[in-house]
Image (cartoon, rainbow, N blue to C red; front, side, top):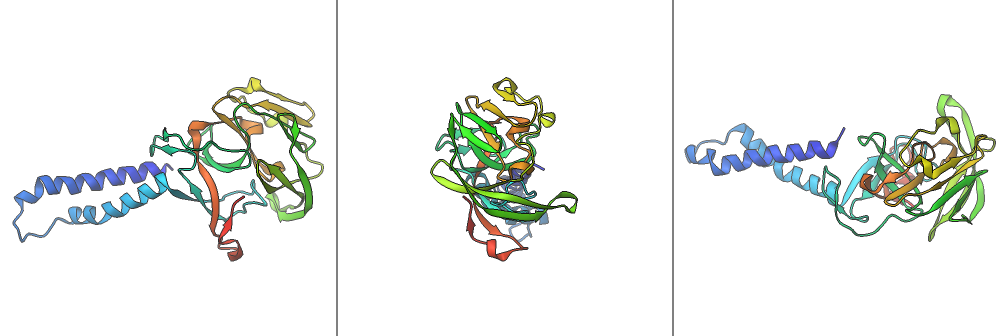
Length: 269
């Protein structure tokens, strides 16, 4: 569902009704006549819709985390806020950048429209920016020939699909200036070549047939994304690069989790 489009249509309809009444219909009513109910509702809802539309289009937009692909950073049920302007001001609905500001950096947690179905919003971590060469072999990440620093930080256990109990190894990984947690499952391949789709710029990537890893050169104007739950994430390894035009914003704050109130107010890093 394109909620931005629905809001825009509601804004246009209520605004048009209000304007039509002010410029034309009101002149033909008696001074003491009651406003038609439709006009009354339009005048009441238009300012509210305008404020909501402006806030979620240019400032912040709320999202709910539906999967465990970003564990342990983000959990299923987390309600997060996404900064809509940090990567540039974009036209609502069209999502066309009109004022460039900052570019996504390695390590950012970013919301974007899934390249294969732009109606779906995904959230992953930026691993590679335009021009980078990203390699992931034997669960070790390398960017531009430099191994990404990691240090082990215990384990994380959770119930996965089919009620299976999963225990993963947690690592602190440093991409860019800040470090973040990520986790891997011992014994799982770095990538499953059978699940790799024929995505645009597929020729920029090479995959090991045994699943030991891959290497990708990030094209200009695109980004390479991976989930922090590396072995349970459907990400750029499988469906390719994220175009700049698909960017929604930078996730920065957890404002609610009804299953764990202790997560409220947690910054996302």
